[in-house]
Length: 477
Image (cartoon, rainbow, N blue to C red):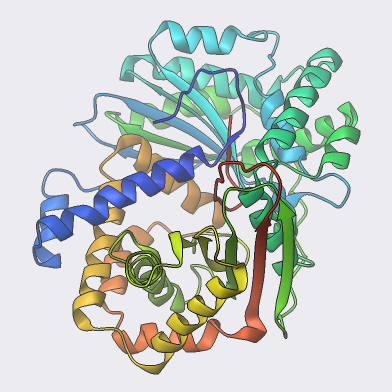
């Protein structure tokens, strides 16, 4: 879905675009072939049911593996518990910058050699930075798994961080910053996040603010590397046809002798409760007007996250969703209306949706339409038919995501990085099933209110540009 071996690092949201396409297909299946949820679950689990195994080494390194004898490939992923969430004021973007530097070479694998070695065996290698983590992966034929271990154990401890490569990567990162966020819609998303989170590090985009990127030093990067790129701050994920005991031994041989580092400092910036409506307005060359509305909501730790997931799906889960039907198909005011809620975050989450209006529709008109839809959701529970359809979409997407070797690795890595226990895989479907229409109505009443809301308006001006919507988080190399 995205090119692993390109030289354009940090292309934003490719993984999120992949996820949206994947979940769209997952959502489409139960609509075209309606079957009871229980049957869908059974069919998805008939051939292979993931059974993750956790092993912890004396130096604090964690290994989670799944033996999937049916997979033609093995994915080797290493997830570091560091992202923009952990950055200090004045040093934003350092997590992503260091991700770039991890590809600039070690004495064993000089610059460019890593990609050449993986490319030569027909494998895939890449990395990405998010708010809560940074991850690196290699997808290869199973017998090439030792190469992935060699690469990742070497650059965990022997990164060169040369001055010449640092300045080269700085130029690339700054160009990415200018190109990626020159997009008017993406700039609006960035402003909405910055307005919604005033204290918490989620205020900052993962790529960082331009002045900070310009002033990061070699010493900054080296200290950051030695603080966070240590065995005790990492989790290795392996999914594929592996022998568990043999894998534990081999990972121990490559990583077990690496000394642990100090315990990284905790993140202490809590976001105060919002007590009033917030606005941000952007005038920028754009094709169409845009309105975005965002609300503070809890993450996966709250039981409400399951009802919020279904509320998000009901509102914006494809062309049959409430927003699309009422704003694009019936009495159209927009050419597109979507949204998102990501409960798998270490910090507080945002529940948001947006619409690209028709050329002569102003952003406030779009907001009034949103508000009418929210009022209706608060007044009466959604129909059981609509709720059942949303449940099928969510459950199908969740189960289908685990059928891919790489997708299952991604899910396990994200869970490990933000502290979600492994039994989440076993309980998620039942928790989604148990949500009632009244639960969906209740979370709409609880969280979708003006005092908890941040609104962003984009007014087009000048030469139009094609928009791109995404939360300013995951950046792919």
